[in-house]
Image (cartoon, rainbow, N blue to C red; front, side, top):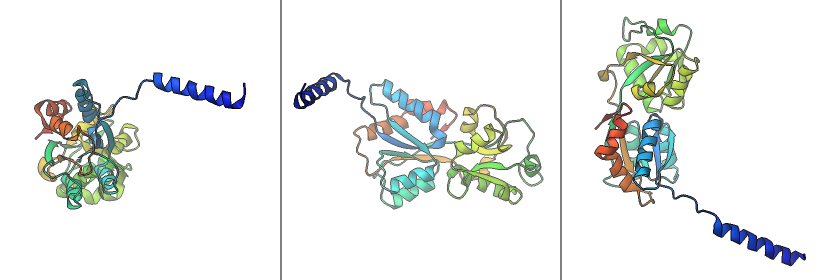
Length: 254
């Protein structure tokens, strides 16, 4: 077979295979979601898909990292933050679609350990003593919401001076939880919903709600959103059915 004929045959074969190949499934809106929402937002996306919509594509990370991605122009349709500060930062840069920001969920802050132990928080407590020579796992207090809430609570309760130099700073709250799960840190500060999703760790103390700013998860459609389902998926998340999904994972709904 001559080369021209061989090239023609190969071209025809590729064309036939292409015609017969199934098209890739359509993708739903791109959602930037706080790391603590992994199970719940995935379940909400599955519920949305069962309703006949393309399943949203979800990127989980620290709210700080996701907000910086949005500021850098990363393509995305919705942002769900674990605090109001990072949503405020996007709003200040004009990156939110007007009228789409809404309070969404709430959470609690807890102390977890692999081995059950009695831990008392606050002045006169034994947090530093129980920590021993180990480190306290936290999301980075310099930028990540869970870490910022944790530092605020420990400062308010008087525990921060004794532990601030022994903090194992993680990139997000799930990474902090993983340090405790693996035994790399004896104690960790995480959200109550993270502790509920974890294996092999237990809640050993609950931070008083008044010891830190309210834990609020706002959501908004980004100004650069292009997906036609962006507003509809937002509406679903805020609906009674959508909020019920998150309530089932331990979040308080707003």
